[in-house]
Image (tube, rainbow, N blue to C red; front, side, top):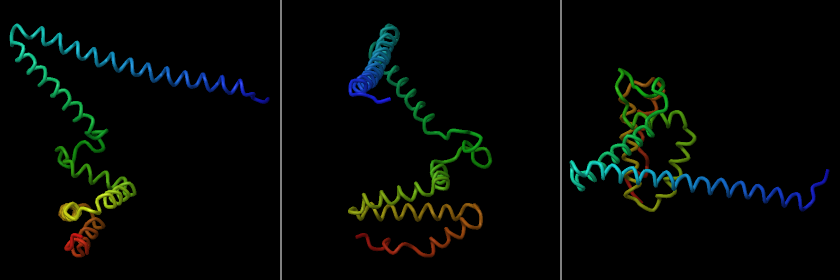
Length: 171
């Protein structure tokens, strides 16, 4: 069975119409959602104005919106599973450095590629380069002080005994 030009053009038109329709639907839904939030905030300001005044109502709603936004981003950035990564040893929350260290251990290739890309992109700024080297040295010293096994301690002590040759000269 051979497809002729008219059939191919018809299929392409239908596919383009479907994509355009989907994009328009997403734009419309986004606009409706944002308008709904705006109207909700305006209604809350009107409702709270008799008790707090207009400025107080706007301040309270602004604080509530910032609080909701902070909660949203906090939930967005926390680890996905609390049983695997959510708690450290002893049941206390882990720091951002611990999370970053685990990400590097789980994805060594991606971490090396990212370090290479940052190094290439920021090669012209000697102050940034020396700052990155100092930060890396501090992180390696912290990794050495943690009891994480024989291999990790050996690598950290080797890195501490042999500082990078570039660290002294920021060119």
